[in-house]
Length: 80
Image 1: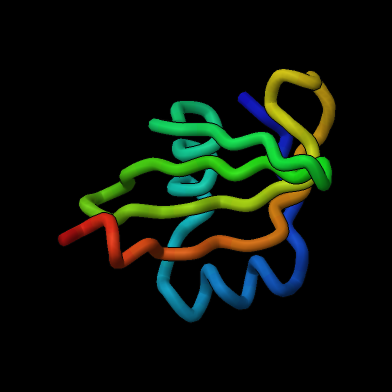
Image 2 (image 1 turned 180 degrees about the vertical axis):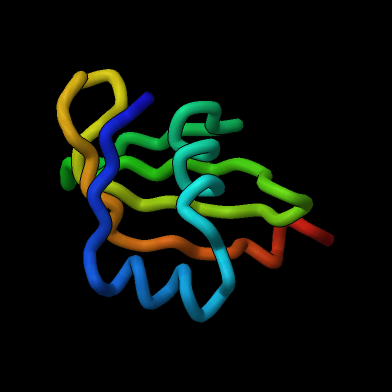
């Protein structure tokens, strides 16, 4: 299991959108799509409990190091 740390901003977003830690771990470990950006951040896209989520991190699960969760976004466009 990946070692995740969360910024205060990510925690606030999760609380506002009622997204539990379990959802973030599930998306990062079994993403439908992963985008490695040029700025060193990684985007994990996936479904959890019928919701399309995007998790933005610094670090990558393949690096074997800790991952810092920067933002969690519910992608309502993908549900259409």
